[in-house]
Length: 147
Image (cartoon, rainbow, N blue to C red; front, top):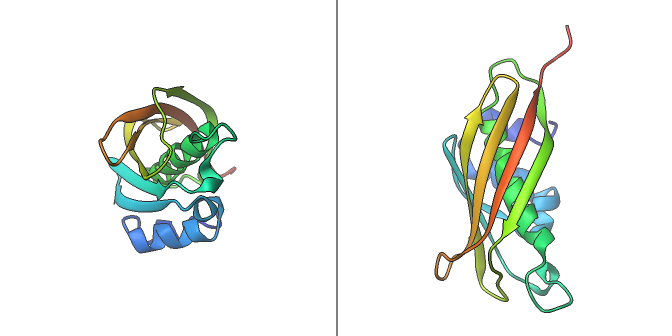
């Protein structure tokens, strides 16, 4: 949770979330947060050649990177008081379409915010026409300090 310390100080700061992201994998992918609300986290990236598969279409891992980043930050925003962090225990992605250029956006919403687990859904779509290209679900286990 080292990198998330900036975010946990001000849980709704886009500046803090994007600063944490710049220093880690999300920054490498060009992911930028556009909304940080505990009930709805949104982010996007502009497709570059680095996001593409050799077949000329958006690489599936690029889609998962966006969705998992959204779910992870959303989880941090909703950690129960006293929790030490979280870890992903399952993720699943259904691909519904693709893109070759433009901006890809993701919108994450909670399905379950429990004491032991959180479940997040993220819809990933093309910004140009809001066409869904993937539905992502992530289950995270809440980590509690050992006493």
